[in-house]
Length: 244
Picture (cartoon, helix red, strand yellow):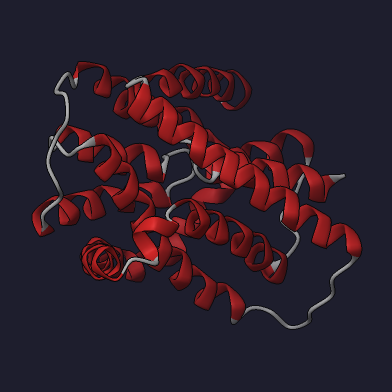
């Protein structure tokens, strides 16, 4: 049951702007649900990675789009290298649930700020736009700060087209995810899979695809990206009640 819960939470919160890492810390301290080891984390991340590939397939398997977004995503990844020397300190934040009220509140403020972005349409991203989005992406290394929430918010405030902000945010996810794969796979000592694990992988993939489609629809068709801030604010208040 824990594996199924982890798979569903991973699939939903990895892409919706509500912070998957924050929810993992919350589940860990509320219900004692732990990660299942380095290999299992890599295993589930491969499902969410494939979810992005499926949803963005038109921008990945098109040569012109691929080269453009690949270059931009590499620029966005550069600020992450500045955080590498502080990796141990960042990892330690996952053991401190008292940070969750602050980090979930920060995510809420980012999301609520998009309510005031009233432009219709928008422009394509430049290298500078992507670098700024990449700088803010480093905040999402803290549990409770949403990666998609911060990057899409910054993109919207930079007057990017909503679909461009969405696409670039998850293109940025791809090299970052590959980098985490490399780091996590080094910790793997043994590989054991059961039919339940395969089922959970499928559920994680399907839920991930649905979450991405839902996010794109809310962001682009309805322009109500800010509405996710209501949820993260509620989680911030819950975390404050539990841990402060």
